[in-house]
Image (cartoon, rainbow, N blue to C red; front, top):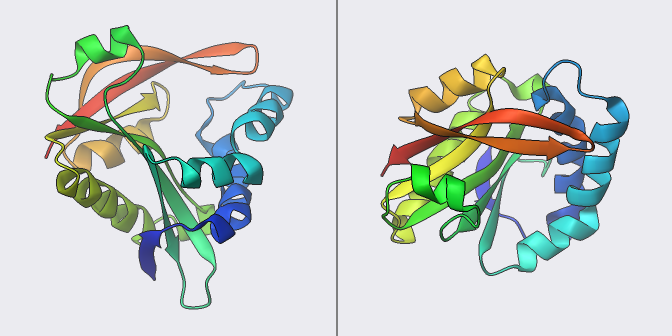
Length: 175
């Protein structure tokens, strides 16, 4: 398997992975219609084309030798727009690990670790001193994975899915 920067031609395949993996990260009780709305409004192929074209974003994909996308990460350069999140982070140059998802069949395969290592390497090579992310407070498995990669809880934020507001931890790692 190989991690590489996604090209515009990869947008449809990345969107398919996003649509199948995003619901798995939502807390129990998240309404299916809210998940479907989020996928449609944020994770469509058209949106991924825009993300891939956006100079402030980098989409990484982990793919097999047969070019099957097994996971992806989206990185966002620069300080967060939300002043509450900015206040919890160290004031150094930072990059958000906005999304990092792996197909359920690939859990335990090393794909998530490859994507995280590649994401943190990209942040370092971009001159960042830290990286940060948001993770649902009920998603203990993801929190343990991020902690294994050096992330620590530094604050909280909210994340809206449809009409529901969820509580997230803000986690940060020094690079």
